[in-house]
Length: 395
Ligand SMILES: Cc1cc2nc3c(=O)[nH]c(=O)nc-3n(C[C@H](O)[C@H](O)[C@H](O)COP(=O)(O)O)c2cc1C
View 1 (cartoon, rainbow, N blue to C red):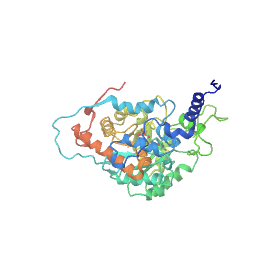
View 2: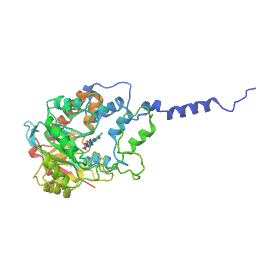
View 3: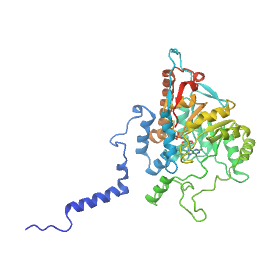
């Protein structure tokens, strides 16, 4: 006679499988969209999207989540991308086959392509040579300028020394008499060609980052502590970090006095604020919603670009970022009023995946795609790109 024990083998296996499925040890195998059996060579990268899975495979889950995601439910982050699908391109015929012209002068800099790198914090999460590697890779890609974040890993002097290309400096102003002046003096002495003051992201919460901190081992945190997404604290019951809540327009007048180079304001998403920037002597408006990391349910940057271009009326240049992944995205932004565009996450994918060579390659892919899109659209020069190129279906 065969006796069945109360715990069958099947039950034991099920229990074990359930335990393993929930185990952080197996996290690496749970990633949904990649095959770890081989890492593709750099020459196999065809478009910017190809870099993201390689980056994902090479960095920690915390670093990836910090870089990839946005604020709250991430509607605005998704909308930044989707907005490009709502803009059609209308080609001109018989436009000739001469060389495509992409060079311009932007705030006193000669650019081979109207493309820059947006400021992003803490590149050491993505590569040990951090911003020095990004700057070297960007310079190798036809001298693409890097905007160095105020919260970069390395001091500005070290980043500046890594390559010969132009770079700008981004500031998160702080209250108090000395910090802004000292920080900007240091950046200007090191050779920054413009100062970007970021005015958005006043009270953002990154839930994914906090989840990661809660779920992963307390012995191995990768990210430095940050107020963004910080759990509720006594005295701060609404999770509103107060570091940037004091920003008001006269701040720009103070910074204007300190800046000996052009002053750029990053985080403008309305025509009204663009007009105020002009009144406060700003040299360039940077249309940005922090890549969907500032206010959820705000509009995509592409949607607000025409309104801002109209308010500015060509008096100062407009820099633009948010969701750019393809050359045709750049073409659409230029047609809707941007003088140049900037890339946030894309160079980080390149950096994490292949180091400086990855940054160079992903930029060169976008440069080539821009040339191809301009050719296909029959707009072979920057001057020929205007609103008549696009049909917008914004909702
Ligand atoms: C990981 C990460 C860090 C960022 N850090 C900064 C920063 O330090 N300063 C800043 O002004 N913007 C920062 N941003 C916003 C970017 O400058 C840029 O506006 C945004 O990434 C553009 O969107 P995209 O990533 O879709 O291209 C950061 C964005 C990301 C993704």
